[in-house]
Image (cartoon, rainbow, N blue to C red):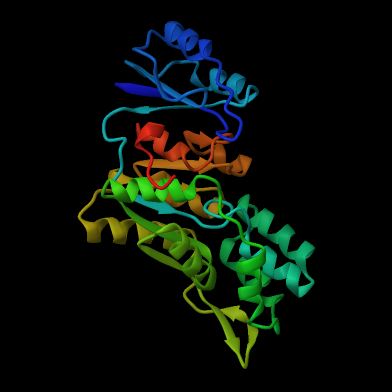
Amino acid sequence: MYVATLLTNPAAPSLDRALPETLRNAWGGGDVVWLSPDEAVEFELSDIPYNRWDVWADLQGMGVDLIVQPVDGRRKQMLLADMDSTMIQQECIDELADEAGVGDRVKDITARAMNGELDFEGALIERVGLLKDLDEHVIGKVLNERITLMPGGKVLLATMRANGAYAALVSGGFTAFTARVAEMLGFDENRANTLLAKDGKLTGDVARPILGRQAKIEALEQISTRLGLSENDVIAVGDGANDLGMLGRAGTGVALHAKPSVAAQCDVRVNHGDLTALLYLQGYSRADFAGE
């Protein structure tokens, strides 16, 4: 059995109540269950509809996300999350670059790397090199003044942890940022790259080995094994090309507001919902949410 979930932006919930009924009837589905009024709804199906992606494209134009996935095992016991443009709304290195006066140059490299056009490690080394001699205290300034959490993140973490799940933040960014974000949101652990500094200034380099695409896969393998879980017990979320490995290996891999080239390689795409979409995908209703 499968389940079809329809989601929209919770900041402006606009799901037409007739829409899931019409779709359910066309696909021969089961009872329509509203997970949140005007925001999230689901119904079961015996098979994946042949025209799923045509319908998905039509619904995108209406501000609605459609996800079809197996019913069995969809509630996960571990969350593995990217940080930049996933759990927070910024790319940390771009914000540091703005402070260093090289923002436009770094943002262009970041965009190309996240779209899969550049090798991640090489792009990271090049961008960090442009930060050489930036005062180390700027990291704290950026954290306090520029970094904002992605909507729904606190509720996602609180609800999954209240239901016994483990949460790991794994980023190609920097430990100075993941440590703070992990603490703010309630992650159990965090992994990222370490910016090197000397005499209070960034050296323009990062510690080796660099945490990139393969390291995120290794985190999935290592943490799930340590917890006695299978990879199918994991829901992973990210937006960039360096997330594709872990998204493909996890039981549910969610491309959240992802780059088009990344989303095209994922079956679970959330373009309109926020991070609470990951709860609806697991069958939680808004009444089940913790931390609100």
